[in-house]
Image 1 (spheres, rainbow, N blue to C red):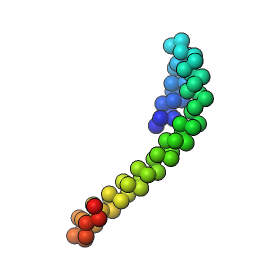
Image 2: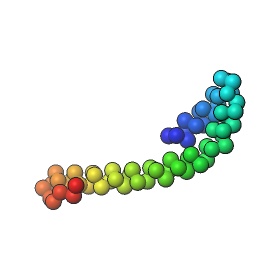
Image 3: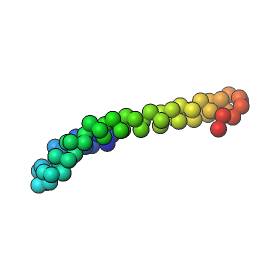
Length: 65
């Protein structure tokens, strides 16, 4: 999401006379995208564990949380 917003900022900042900011955002767009992808993976793993624990609890199994 951050990389997507950065791309939109890159398009809009020159219109607001913030060309230096547009250049900075453009320069760091790829690293921001890679960081966002890297941070999404642990979030997905935690979410998966929580869903599995909730399912196990709903089925009367042992609690995993």
